[in-house]
Image (cartoon, rainbow, N blue to C red; front, side, top):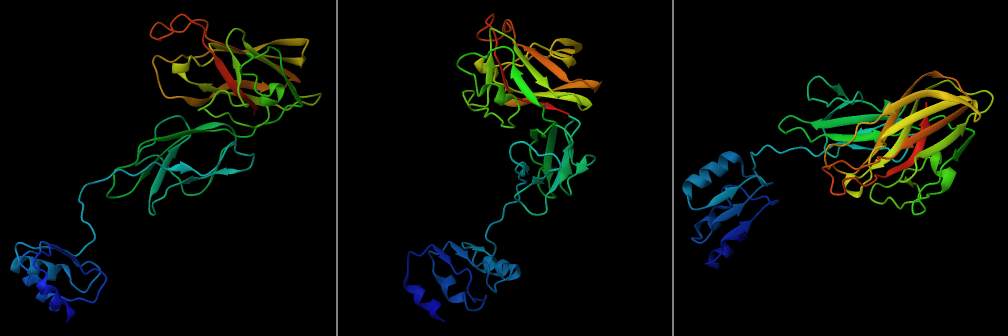
Length: 314
């Protein structure tokens, strides 16, 4: 009944009565104000049917019974990984999304997930070794999210000792031998972080001892950083030598590494080196920097860098 007092406001254009007990009948007095253009009455007893009747009777007045109305289809944000840093052995990996009712689809085989056939994330995942995890979030009435991609670095079998056999550049010496197996990941935003070992003029060479009763290994993962614009590239080639000890080794694996064909975002990369049931007490890993940056690079012809922050054994 107090709304009639507003009739004296000859310049009133916008009025909100949300969250009150107003009805279509008791709101009638203010509708006579000729300057009124917008009336907000969501969370009241005024229904959508009432709104239509009021709008018909007062064509110059916009009546809003909902807080907003937007028919545009929006894109969901990406899912995210709940785990931090290196995934411990036995720890499960969990994907999350901030919106309720979202379905997360994922892959672990390197392919991109789709909204129909890819596996649905329903409970935390057991990932036995370092893997690339890709995921999208989907929900009816929304566009699926853009692709979320991350490398899940999983704790491996720790060697009895690890030693650098070549010295990193004096600017990027990290914490020496310790940096190889301290389970500390480097920050891609800063290659001067103590976790990184940087090489340019010499190859990265490191030795790892497992003792007299070594485990059977199926793969080695070198975690390295890539920032093409800063001349930090994947290694050009990698070799694995193994044997009973450091004096009795032979080549058991060699790989040429595919190089970037253009500039792309900086990222942490897991270089996965497959082994055939290797059972050795000692391993030597060699990773060679790019000798000459490619012709399309702004520093073409100059030497590239490689930055290593951790080596994993599985």
